[in-house]
Each structure stands twice: as C-alpha cells, then as structure tokens.
Length: 517
Image (tube, rainbow, N blue to C red; front, side, top):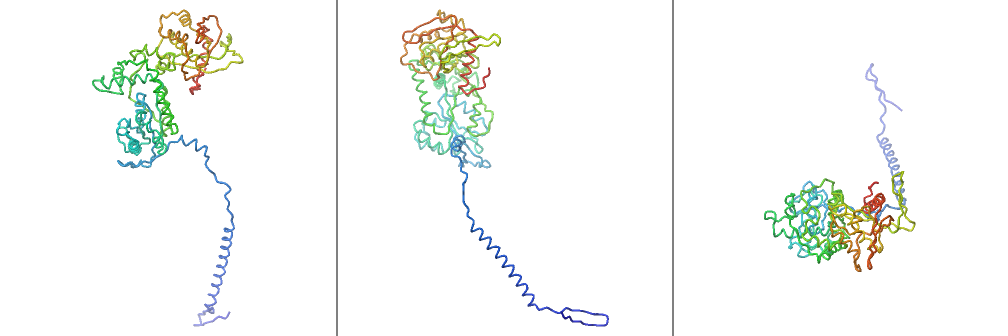
C-alpha cells in the first residue's frame, strides 16, 4: 500500500499511512451485524419450534385420601378468627379461637368443671347464659345470643377477651336446648362448635344435691345468703346438714326419667363434634382434664378450682329416710346408685365377684405357691363386675357382693346359682340367718331377692357370670319361682385367684390394661 513520506527537515522524517475510505469500514460493520442477526433469529426459531411440539400429559395428580380426611376432620377443632364489635383483639387478631359448649344438667358438677376450664389462661367459659328466660324464648333469640358469645362480644368476669384460644359456655338440657335441638345442631355444625357432655352416673346423689340446693334457695342457711357452690369445708358442712326426704314411691321412675333425658340429648347431638365426660371420672382421674384440653386444641396446663364438694361421704348420711330409699332401690337396676364409688376408692372398701358358666376344678401347687384353675372344655368366660359399697364393714361388703351377684346372675338367665366366698362369718350369716354386727337390711334384701317372683325385672347394664367351684360346705335355699341358690365356702387361695381374674377383667373392660400381677 502506498504511503506518503513528508520531509520537514534534515533531522525529522514522518511517515503517514494512506487514508482508508469510510464507506468500506461501514460496509464491514453492517455485514457483521447482519450475520449476527441471522444467527440469533435462527436460534430463536428453533426454541419456539421445540416448545410448540411438546406434548404435556398429566399422568396422575396426588389427591387427598378422603377416608383419612373424614377420620381426622371430627378430631380437629375448627379454627375461627372472630372480629368483635366491642373491642379490638390487637396483636391477637391472628390467633385462632375454638368454639365449645358444655351440655349438662343442674347439680352434675358443671359449675366445678367450668371453674377448672377457666383456670386455663386461654379459655373463656361464660357460665350458664341461658338461665335467663329472655335469651331462650325462641330460636331467634338463642341464635343472637350464640353469635354474641362466639364473636367474643359477651363480656363477663370469665372473659379473656382478645387473647382467648377457646370460648364457650355451659348449657343445661332444660334451657331450650332440647326444644330447638334441630336448629341448634345445625348451628353447631355450621359454626364448628365442639360439644362437651358432662353427666353424673350416680343419679341418686344428684337428686340429693338438687333437693338440698332447692331448700337452701328459701332457707338461706349461710347467714341469709343462698350459695349453690362453696369454697370452704365449713360452708359445705352447713349446707349438707339439711337432710331431704326423698319420695321413694316414685324414686325409680324419677331416676329413669333423668336417665332418659341424657340418652335423648346424646341422640340429638351425636352428629356434632363431641366428647362425653362423667363427673365421677373427673374426680378420681384428673388425666381426663388433659383429654379435654386436647379435645379443645389448647396447650396443656394444670387446671385448679377453689370449689369444695358439699355432700362428702356416703349417701346414707345425707338422706333422712335412707332406709326407705335403700329398700326401694336394692335389687333393682338402680342398686349401684346406693354406692359412692369415689368415697369407696378413698377408703379401699370394695367388692369384686366373678361368675363363670361352668364348674372349674382347682388345685394348689405347693412348690410355686399358686392356685391352678382347670376349666372344663365346654365352659365359656362371660364377664366380670365390681361395685362400690362406701364405708362399711368387711361382712357388709361381702353381703353386698352376694346381692349384686344374684341380680346379675338373674339377668343373664342363670336360675341355679352357687355363691362362693372365703369368709366364714359371711357363710354363717347367710346359712344361719344371724344378723349381729351387720346391717339387717342387706340380709333381708338377699332373702327377699331369693324368694321373690321376678316376672318383669329390669336388666342391669353390665353382663355378669356364674362361678362354680366345689368345696366342703354348702347349704341350698331353693325358690319355687325364682333362683335356686346355694352358698359355699371356698379356700382363701382359690378365692384370691378368682378375685384377681375378676379385677383384671373389670379394669380391661374400662380401658385400664396396666394392672399387674
């Protein structure tokens, strides 16, 4: 390529390259740009073509197991985020709230149970709000009251307000609950309200409490003030000093009427999310309170109450005409109401009896020190029973066991019965009719049952069984139109083995499998 040489002087020589045409450079840049553009366009077309040709097929998608969901749904309380009109929940507005209701009857321990719940820092149980007639005069006022409670706008001393994790109240069966049960059940389902049934097994003790409380409304034994619940043993002693007279002529029908009301309530509300509690179980087993907290979905805490039981002790000390009541209920399906299971457990007085459907041979292993039972091949094990008998002598406990065994054996169709015990004193009392150092009514009730015509006897709730273990002494008391009853004395070791089996059977039936040898 030609160059221009310029000589300025003799010492300087400058060489300048020849100037290229600007058109040539622009042409090169344009060509390069075009090539790059074509390349990019080609790549993009390939990608678009690939996407459009993809055939995406959904082979299968995971779906929730409807069976598991149906099982878990009633176990999980519905969560709510209420927005009350009377105050702001503030920082707790995002904390969920569970709705519950305590369904019970007067004098069934619901007041004590509610104080236990309210001792939890996150629970607000608002009391017996439908005791006021104006709030339950029709279904509209009931729904309005329910909405106010579950919207956290029902304010009283039990309210935890903005940070409540569970809110509810107690509702008695005779306060409009049964009259409008269909609408109320529908409301509970729509709002996700969990129902806690709380009843008493011993309806006779409840009746005594109702009569005593009704009397105090007018008598006002505590310094002119009526109190349904007390917080000291001194106050409890004053209220329990009144002994009501029970109408024993209608006693059985009255107890049945109360029992029918509880059954009907369970039938009405069985479709709701619910749990069933009994006052007697709460008293002796506080782990039931953990079950309640789990049912409500709240953190477990130690629940306490300041309330004191008013009628503490055997029922015979709180009824003026106890002999009439005892005579009326003994030998019927309401016999167990004469006993107080909680008091019996405290003092360790109880009666366990067992029956089988066959004769059982027995022998004693001298080396092992054990009684061995050898049942015949065709025998069937039927069941076991246990009854609380309150504070009494050993002889009275044995006699109560005899009476209960006769009733239960009759109800399973046993007409020839052998009753066995290891107490010589009991054997003599029954065989010779000696009544010293015992309650003569028990012996009389046993003889009445043996000689009584029972064409229309009611069945006792628990099935029982018959025991036959041959031994030395026996005396029969035949009855033409009832049971053929024999009494036998057996060895103490044999009876101990049988009693262990009976206790074991009783505890297993009631969900306690931790009973050891």
